[in-house]
Length: 453
Image 1 (cartoon, rainbow, N blue to C red):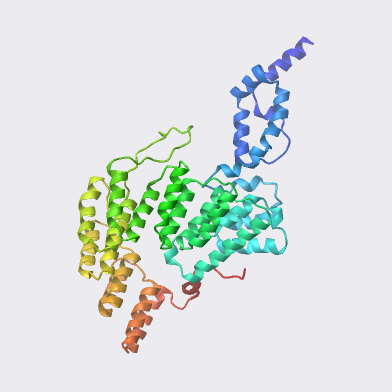
Image 2: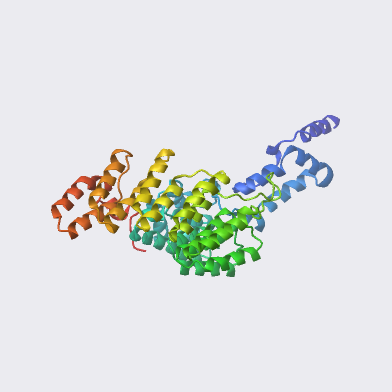
């Protein structure tokens, strides 16, 4: 008997997580982390010695991990998704595997086909909410200006379709889902849809994050309703959410769109000149200090330059570039130079645009297709100098290896046709169509296929 007790004591003294007998279930990432912490040797020893016997701990752990708090763990992550954490889901792999594989490969068309196939088979109801949410997040356009209205409408219809199916299946949207929708519809300037989403968010008692407010703010700017941005900003302050650089950048752009560069400058001085702005509060467990002073970034100065550029105040733009940016130790990048070139072109100052074009090359900043797009369209449309526009296209291709946009070629061809120079227009098409893909399927619809919804 003594030997048996001694053997049991020796076994019990070995802290092994394998000895915690849990029922066979598939925990999510949050549950696995909680299980790892709860079954750590030090914590397990303390629990068994001072609080609960080991057998009681074995009975309690499964109940904790399967509690409603665990079921709501998806709402604790505001932005980031782990596309691979759902491999332990209890969903039938034969049903979910095609959809998950297409999501993981970031293939929008394959995801759309897989989702429709499940809907046609009436199997969407078998998927957990996270799968619908991941499908929703798959449909996005990184650079809106690079896509046609036809391509944007395809993504819009897909988002609406998935959103309707989620509501029909009683899948609750969280802050991440609303952030994604507000981001897309805000960037395309659909403020009415953003207003409806905001109302749904409030009625669903979903707490908006700083990103939610920022996306909603940006929607007012893109939809030419800049005055509403300040109402949203007041609501943001009432919710005790600290603004970020993006928040203030959007407000500066709003002032610019209201033709009030003085207001933009005043906001800049208030926020960054006196150092009253602070970074958003972080969780108490982080080692980063909870409040950090905000400093203007290159995006901030781009917004400020944009505000003055709309009013054609080039001397103020030069002052910002020459004095303010070095004062805050911000070096100009491609976005800064594109902003400067754009507004000089918009106000028919091609000489000023050339000055900035040469300045950026001296600084070692390589222009992109957007840089040339401003100058080519300005030469062709404003000054009707098609020859100079063609020289710019030759320069961008031969020196910088940049292919022109379809819109640039269309502008030149249209201008030549209006002048009755049909032979010149034909030569333009023959020379440049292979670089733009004019007439190809990619030129018409990009990599997004259309399917009725």
